[in-house]
Length: 409
Image (cartoon, rainbow, N blue to C red; front, side, top):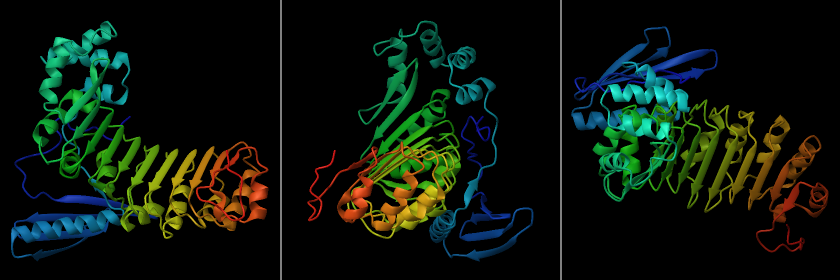
């Protein structure tokens, strides 16, 4: 089941201007709230413990433009602290669509196709034909091509169709354009059933924010963002079904999110990651996380503790891949907590020290079947000799070492 029933129309009410927005935070034994309301040039803030009226204060910023700027700054500051937007439920989805979002099986899709045909939705006959005769709806099919041209006009937007539905959508705009058409698509039943969205360029910065604010992606399971700014806390509140998240050369603001369904997190940075991108990982709560991949172009020493904090709160983690990401002391902090499910660990050019290697040796005594790939150049010869005794350990020197001459496997 999805955590909440999402509105079919996106939940946006155009008649409401400057609505109050509410954010909440789990803070140990209590749950706190923070609300912000903008009316013209005036901003009202109210915060307190959930269940109490809170304490409100209002300030006039002189102009509406200034108020909008201050509102955005305040929201960014609070989401970095871990506050997550609470969205009021809108009109419930039709049962057929809600069920298909939760359970994308042929039976659920057949019920949806029947409902779509009753609504005279042009996607209904296409979906029904594909379910009745698998493989019959391919590119060149008149109905499918008409939908594809209607929903994804232009060379910078395209979809991968499977079994009569668009399962993956790619948007590669280098200008912030085409948002209206894409937003309209994601408000359709077909848009609610897209599994994966890949966006890059200017559309990623503005378009994704708009789609998230409108609640247009409630059923999305995979998201890839490249070459744009990416605000993780907004994803945490707007994508309740998200399982796979990856970023490529994006300015990432991770904040302190809680994504209970996320299983795969992949972060690629062309240069050094921004402080905001990694520093809050230590307080992130990703209880379902199974795979973590971080690759950076320029490594720094300051992010090991945050990474150890994230992994310590991810009991199901099975695979960790780190490249050019200095984690000196990270394994020594993390491995003693006993990641019971870990099966694959890769650290290339990570500047591990002897405390990391010794912690790894102790952990391998109870998890000898794990596969471990390491750059040995920062590890002393005695510890290296001990590591080489484990069948699952592979050593891959990335630079020539004065005391280690094996080429690795």
